[in-house]
Length: 621
Ligand code: GTP
Ligand code: MG
Image (cartoon, helix red, strand yellow):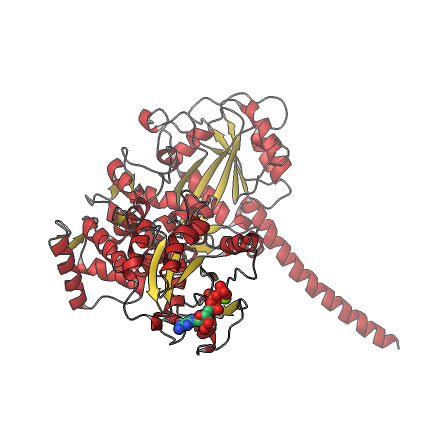
């Protein structure tokens, strides 16, 4: 976040630029000065804002116009120095120096300027009268300061103001001509207000204000300070305080006041704590914190993550009916730049009559975290996770699971979210299978809820050995598995064929042979449309025979029709994904134990034999 600050001193000859720099460094007025001081770097720890600071001098005698322009381009802030005892040097600020610094840029970012009146020891009064009109003409002038290199007056202050102008610039926040906050600043502060308004009553209670204060500044407000704040707001803004709570108008007024009083670093602290950068947009550092996910690992929300998103849900479930209505969902979306979840949502997670219940909401978070953890981090960022949970980043809400290879070695997984690919030829009933998983029966889909594109994913929970697991079904189209390098990886494969049309089995069988036969992924063949009469198998291996030969469990019948719908197959898939070594059915596990037993007997026999052999050898000697 913190970067170097480069301060350039400009101004007419002999105004004291070089003397100011040398006075700062040597802490005494130099009797003799060179035309130009060497560039100096002040280490971060000795500057007030703790950033490395470079101070650069300029001398007309030593530098060309091109060199001057180069230095201006590199500077983060320019101090235009004048001599308080020489009116002519003041006039040049307007006619020469400011146009030189910011003349090239019509609109857009301007370099902040500090006006520095040097040699205050030579003048009794102040030069303010001459300087104020210039300040109101050029909004990029952050402030002005009178000082003396000779008396060492205001020297460190001058460099502090320069640093502050770079680190906490006023320009992006405040329009000095209109005397109000700029729109981008209002927008950012409004989002911060919404996030801090935990009960969504459009006002901040004492408790909410204190939590806000604590997350931004590390400590709550003293009770008296809290009352003082509300009193000031009350006096100045109609409707700024309502029922002893601070409204959005009041909150915006407070920030305007900070800035007008030169305390804009306070507003910057608030904005930065909530992730905003210099351009008042959420920074990449904030939205995309580093999270290392090695190959073969998956991503899940952990306990903290679920707790946080559930709290957000409860905040927006204003009627406390345990689900979000479309209006409540919009209110949830309001702190995002665009709706985070699209029209696919109702097809991917369990919903109830057009509302999103907590269960479906948690399913959706789980799905996004698993499929696209970057997007999940971004979403948690928009919801203010790092600030509201007082954590370094929202990566704190994510668990990266151990490598799948290790799961396979141990024959068990610690994952709570499992992926099942549902593979099958066109029309075998994959989409109906996905929808049945969400509790939707064939022919009873709500028209409004089903856009043209069928969902690729469906997620729900399943009990495995008394433990709740999330199972993601992913529909894989027939064509995509024939592509050059298809991604067939998953925790369990569901190979679906149409039981009423056994001809569709051939495709499944070839996918199995091509992608799963030699791997470790457990596979289950599912014979769909079990409510229809069984079709006649073409010549060759029947599905049941094929499974027997490949030591696979027999095909599981499934029907999505209301009368025959059974969810047993989903539980079975989840169990196979959780305990992959048991997945090949009893036959396989018996042979496993048989092998172990034979191995032990074998070892014992060898030991006995070699002992007898040894005795035999000894005897012959
Ligand atoms: P150029 O390098 O020619 O652009 O000038 P400069 O802006 O670097 O000025 P410099 O520091 O060389 O100072 C010019 C003269 O003003 C020197 O004689 C300094 O001693 C004197 N001077 C600088 N600062 C002060 C001050 O605060 N008070 C008084 N009385 N004299 C000062
Ligand atoms: Mg000089």
